[in-house]
Length: 81
Image (cartoon, rainbow, N blue to C red; front, side, top):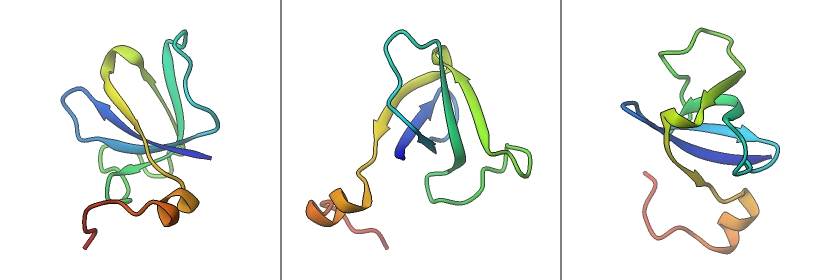
């Protein structure tokens, strides 16, 4: 599972889990387990929502977050407290 940090126009970024990275030909981004950047539940989503679909025109950019193994191998240069 790949974790993405999705920056949505005029909204706070959210984390999504995807099976594979989106392709350049995709018109939407489909992700599971939507949550805030701090891993809290998104207040603007209904309770129990597990999958979201965003059109690409609403997305500013997408960051691919490191997996747990990659994080242990290459620690991030900032504190997380």
